[in-house]
Image (cartoon, rainbow, N blue to C red; front, side, top):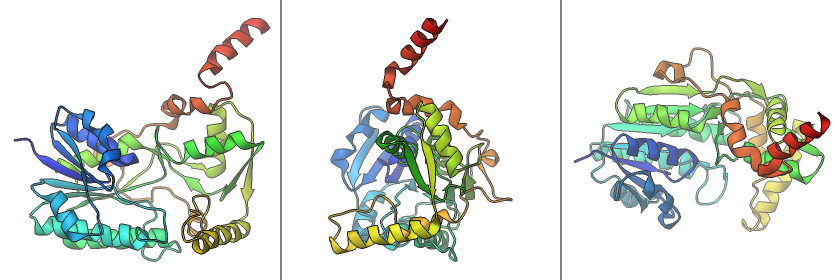
Length: 327
């Protein structure tokens, strides 16, 4: 019988790409998520019955144990940007990750791949980064041979980075960002999946920092995105002092409304994170150490950002017609 991998968060942005690639490798794939009825889109990744979404809650031992039953390997893709609530940084990225690793070890599962993030550091100013570091430490304590992948900002068709700011660019002539000079090294989502597959297959272990071939500031990334979507906007830097106040106000609004208002705009912790460059550290093992050539943004962005152009799918036709008239 084909081997089985359980992917926690397998219906999420990164997880779905790992699920698809593991199915192509001939593995049975168990997609463990909170809302399996909303993850049915993963089933066609393989033949009938090969990829199955199941209900799992990483805050509960019994639920995690059931999801891991009979598995040969486990991948954890679960992360959060919520600092409060039941599924906060500590509950998900520290305790949840630790729980998965501990129970996997108890069940005799020898292989684990964990998706963390560049910047994970127990001494970081950001709660998010500290929770990621604590999760990594707990995983390595339970499963010393685990593979940990630390990507920079991730791009791809379903991303919440370029898509978010492209949508914002429709609202007016100014595109405000905090930390405009902070550097990032965007990595293509499927390159992360290719790396994860090597971990599941037992071809690699240890910590890898994943970045693409381009290192650019936040401002440069926004200007790149604007060129792709054919819009002229002023990328306005919000000073960290002002951004911190904005984050505090928005966090407070979420607190006093009991979560009815969800601060998905800018949090104080995100402002703290933006003070530090999000790039691969010198000396870190990278995609190249896995034999993977990182995908450039130019090769992908136009394939999924075109809906944000003023004329959408007709932009190329209109530009061609304009050139004919001018000729």
